[in-house]
Length: 209
Image 1 (cartoon, rainbow, N blue to C red):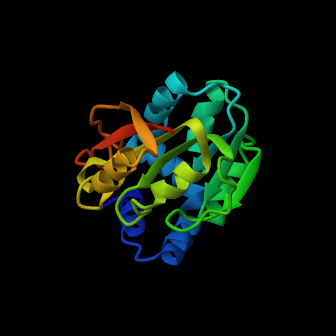
Image 2 (image 1 turned 60 degrees about the vertical axis):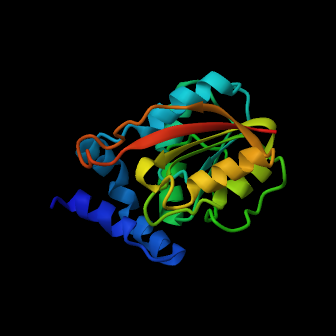
Image 3 (image 1 turned 90 degrees about the horizontal axis):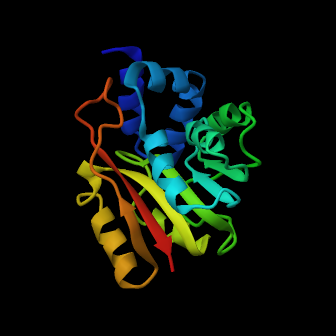
């Protein structure tokens, strides 16, 4: 197994946020190269393609689980300027900061209470975060809380975790209780066609009510 493939599995196997944070800290410097060269990681662009259809270029945007800023780079190339980065790994945030694409940085983990005001952001984007060994489905409650009414939440989700990890129940429950409504859902696609062709994702977009 190639070194980059081992690192992906190693991250998936994290058993708690501290372990996940430490592993991302160690991977940060090689992360962009590994994903671009070894995996042809395309989810940031696919999520951005959905985002631009629904979100004004002046929006105050949170990149939740920003990592090294691969999503931010896509957003900036589309004309977005008011971007904030949040990640549980300071090492990843340091890499993102070096790219000069975000205006603010927050070290926080999805899954618990977020230290943001209610309705703080116009939109939230979260790519590669809802996957094996990472943020739980209940994270979506907090993302909805910090997004203004009428604002958009766009996220990628591994197809094989949609039901087993409780996302279907969470997302449907939030629709039924009037928290948000579905704006768009993409077809399934391979986000890592070179490295993990067996993995499939969808991009989901919800408008907060």
